[in-house]
Image (tube, rainbow, N blue to C red; front, side, top):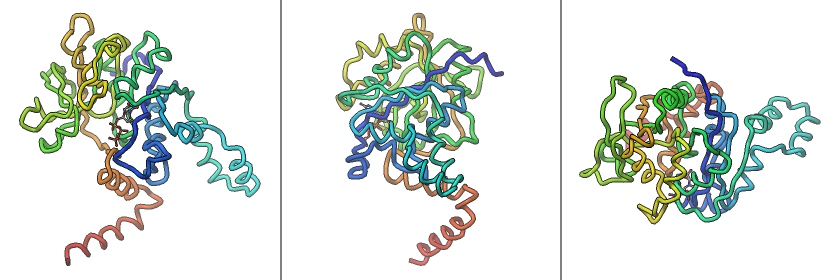
Length: 301
Ligand code: UTP
């Protein structure tokens, strides 16, 4: 059942160094890498807006101009397309301009995801808010964020998104220790470990890049010491919230069983581009048979 929507703010951290994509990310944030024909960040802003989060705060680092420009007007391009009467392309240019009420805050040094979220404190104030990472694209045909927003309102807790992954990949994620609830799609998170070895992972529930957080997280982040990788980890702050149910309402996980495309590392990025392109009406009909033929070529090797 849909609850009254009262969360309107989305925070999108995009200040990471993107070292796994060098040299592409030398002069451009990794969130601007195109996934088919749109930068990854645009899919994420569109998802936020679809869920009713029209106030978007982007946390930017070096090379922030590309991000800001993408969501701003480009007068010369618009004028040229207008003069040519190319309304189809003009619409594409304007798609990202009028999407949301965009705000920007700077994270001087990329000291970790927790630190990036802390930079949102002033803008967010004292209300629950969502955090969406540009690395993860959630298929628009599958529901996740609206469900998380509903659970936040219903449970007055922090909500994370969980995906069951192969135990061999759990070391790439934050892993959650969980207890069942009476809802098969929702678990209570009793512990979290950032990037655990397979042998010590509490489960194969991986935390993926969507969160709905209570403003109390800011106080916790203020005193969170650098953790894994010397970075201030959001996972560590959430771990503290999960351990103090009485004061924080605890942490719950919404189990996502839909389609998620990981664009954070090279191989997964390539797979994401292929999957999304193969599904599109304009590209799929030509791409799918080509892919089948291409793959058949490998069988013969
Ligand atoms: P990642 O750890 O995946 O991003 O952070 P990264 O550090 O840019 O990537 P690599 O490992 O060097 O290739 C997850 C998300 O958190 C943001 C990133 O932009 C990404 O969206 N982030 C991370 C920040 O905004 N600030 C930080 O200090 C760290």
